[in-house]
Length: 125
Image (cartoon, rainbow, N blue to C red):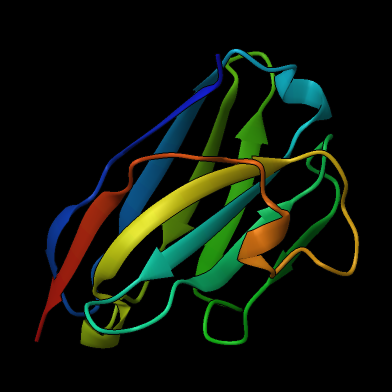
């Protein structure tokens, strides 16, 4: 059974940083494409970033470019999301997700087979 467990969320002031982690089990992590998504209250879940199998390829949503960095450690079965220069509008529950292929549908929630339970990020102004 696949489990994805996020951690690292919390309350931070605007301009601050957080690093989210997602620990995976029950799948061949080195063959999983890993993504981060977020969902604010009353809004749809949206794509944040995705990283390929080896970590050499990644892709970001426009709002994340230059502020967020996705990375992975296949030895630890963990994917990370470093978030800098946080803004109040970044407040959301953040979810990691896994799928098998890195392709043009990386930002589509429907293409991810496995999801974590989420970790809350709150940015105060």
